[in-house]
Every structure is written in C-alpha cells, then in structure tokens.
Length: 207
Ligand SMILES: [Zn+2]
Figure (spheres, rainbow, N blue to C red):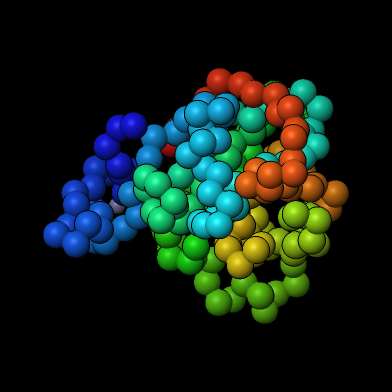
C-alpha cells in the first residue's frame, strides 16, 4: 500500500506526533489509501464486521455493469472512516456511466471530494427540503437529496446505518442510474454470497 493522501484533496499527508494525519492545506484529515481493484484482496481491507463503515454496492447491478474499484481511509479497522465503491457500465443514454458510492462518518470529506464539493458534509439545509429520490440500503428505504457538485456529475446524498451515504454519477446526464428501485447491499454482511462482476479500476475512483 502506498503513502496515504489527504482525503479531501489527495495531497500527501504527514503524520503528527499523536499519529493523526496532517494536510498542509486542510490540517488534520483522514488518510486516504490508494484505490484497489475489487477482489479478495480489496475485500480483506474492507470487511470488519464490528467496525467502521458499510461498503455499499448496488445489487443487483444494472445489466452489464461491473464493480471497478474500492477505496478507503486509513489502514486497519480503527482508521476506516470512509469507504468508496465504484461501478461502471453502459449508460442509459449510450456511452459509459460511472457510479461511486461512499459511506463515511461526518467530517471526513471523501464523498464531498468525489462530488466536487468543498465542504466535507452536506450541510444542515439538507433535511429541510423534500428528498429527490430514494434507494434501498440493506433493505431500508433511504431518502436521497440531489445536491450541487462538479458540473460533469450528478450528486445524491442521504444517511444509512448512521453514516453519510453519497452516490455520485458521471456523466451528469446519467443521473437516472440512481432511482427509486436501486438497492444497495453492505458487503460486510457475511450472509451475502454474490458473484459480483468486476472490471478494471475506473477513472472516478482514482480521482
Ligand atoms: Zn488536503
């Protein structure tokens, strides 16, 4: 595993005396590990049944989609405060569409960076508006709000299992990848035995 990066800007970080990570621009931050292709090795870094955050993946995947990478903060169970899973496949309008699903604790900022937003959390205005759609996360209806982000992507955010849930779609015109019947499963669930199709690392997860 390479050196950890700032979760908010991907600059290199340095270790503080107490073991926390410092970005010269953002101060104390979570350290972000390199993206990994999805497979047994990546799963071994994600699946701590008792800890940390969910690793959400759409299941069933849209037709001909595959899982194209994972990324997390820190090393070991205690430092995992954010997990991103990317999926890639044919868009509804033709061309390739990409989806990155992030689960994270408040204040981390991985989802916000994929979203192209500067503040790490969605902000208090979120839940005062009606949600724009919902998905099912571990079987629970989960409202999502469309929020502004980078101009080339569509961004949805909500909360599931007590963590922020971000779904970011490229290009923005493929926003319908996130729809009312989308179901997310938590890869930590030991009863799951899905044969997930996998593909090469996607561009977005490497950003
Ligand atoms: Zn930074």
